[in-house]
Length: 467
Image (cartoon, rainbow, N blue to C red; front, side, top):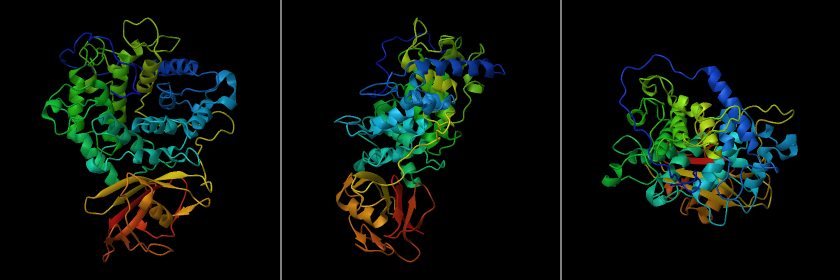
């Protein structure tokens, strides 16, 4: 289980899921009830803001609130302690992510994935947090060369699921997926290979392990993995998504609409499952998710909420709200997946997005790079470089990648090795007829790769050999 996930579950399983019969025609939570839930939920999450404006700090904290705020239509820049706009939540979070001491001396990939999803929701371009912080490149640095498609140790499958959610869900400011299709395909292959026989997923790696594939799945991770597939471009009619839906349906509790999770009925597990359905465009209030007694997972979540206070309890038996349950519950009820585009702020003069505009000469930074040889070989890395101006060039990035890429080996040779001109060979593979090296930045169309091509701060660079 991930270190940044909620505190360890201690509850035992509550009522089991019951078999469903004929389904009523309409959901029970009305738009008005959902709107009230959102309003009150936002009020509670605002109460979690510290006096300095922060939601996040060292260790496990409340930064997932940004994903819930965005889903509920509240801009992070509008969230202030006592009305002090200088301490708005977005500015304070950006300052934290920009600091050299963040996240820790021993970071893991999920640190950067969590930050990417929440920075995006807060209106901070995750590739351009500051002159030195590029969260997309930070994630690229955890690519597993020997197990292409995994990010971070493959045993912690959670890291790969959230890499897919972050890299595909945190789009550019213009709404474009940043990463190339070749990368998406590699990760999707790993996501599919880890689906358990019962149709769901769990936090640990199951690929190639029959006993793990036969083990019971977890409601939480099934929601996250479903969302990871869908944001990677897999349609919700895909067989693996249909099987995941069937798994979730089998866990429905007839009289409450809850999913009976591995650790019992609780708000967090239900929130993740509903967010997975939301990300896949599957209505959690109709069809398979409306029980014979007319209850839905959204009904359950709203029943867990204290009103007018707005907080959600973790267990049905709890007598007070939980911060994590309130975040997961609100995000799901509001219709969010695991991140959402930032809403337009209401604070006068506040932009929807903030981002570093140029490189700072002499300030070390990273760029995200993929190299696709057109024959199934894909190299992924974070390239460390220190720019000498406000922009750099593709040639300079590739030169830096030869000796300063993580993981190493992303680029071994470049022709021409200096100056300007069309790139005619990369990693020993030369242009041949109409099959040549082409470049794309931030998901734009591929064009002829040249050494002099301008590269800006935070650009996600993809190189591909082919027609």
